[in-house]
Amino acid sequence: MLGFQTEIGHRLGSSFVQRADLVVRAPEAGVPVLLVEVDRRTEDAHELVAKLRRYWEWGRLLPRDATKSKIDLVRSRPDAIEHVDHEKRLWRRFYPPTGREGLVPLAFVFADTTTTKVTNTTAVLEEAGRRYWAPRRYDSLYEKAVTALDYRQAVPVVVTTLEQLTEHGAGAAVWRRLGRNGEQTLTAALDNPDGDDLYRAQEAHAEAEDQRRRAAEREAQRPVCSRCGRKFSDERWKEITVHRTAVRAGDKSVCGPCRADDVARQEAAAEAARLTAAAPEPEDDQEPDRSRGWFRRRT
Image (cartoon, rainbow, N blue to C red; front, top):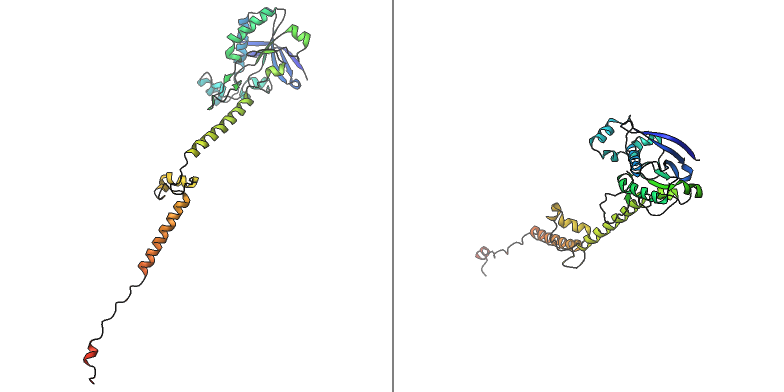
């Protein structure tokens, strides 16, 4: 289903109303919502940058009935709104989820102009409006392994001309996304193949590689028994390194089985000593009964 609305106002905190020339809703085509600004050579490129900034600012507003904790958070510092989920922001009261990262997408459609002016205007939008449309690097522990970009706070911006739309149709590859080269279909231009999905995959892969590296480094440090040459088990390794068990670990250079042999020998020696200590003392030989000789009958 395709829907259009014209001159839709977006009120900013300053009470200024930014009106979109057209709001397109085509969920079945993969575009739940698209704001459209049509430029017929009546506006300077920097005026278009100002429009982009205002749409970006509108996408960062809270609704009036936001919770006090959210309001206090946003007032606490300029970038605090970035920690508020889009579902809690004002724009979600007006428009459905876009199905992609970022704020409501914006299209600049140039009409009755030259290719040179379109190129020059687009260049100004890209350079002067970078803060509003450009993704950021993800804040990751694996910075070198993660090349994905964070589009969550950006306005996706696409440009085309009315002449291209008239000749080829809106479903053709006539849209160019700011920050990219070449023209794509609208859904492809709005998609973020280097965004959240790639980030999750790269983060998971980097984490798995890090765990493998750590495991290999740990294995390389595993002690080897000085007696039999076997590697220590995790249990024995822990036993000789944890303070409360290390004091009773015996010879820390031997593995668990060798330590068990030592304990068995010690216990056997202790048992033998105990049995020896418990054995009765042998009686001394009695002296001959010399007194009996005194009374022997003489023969």
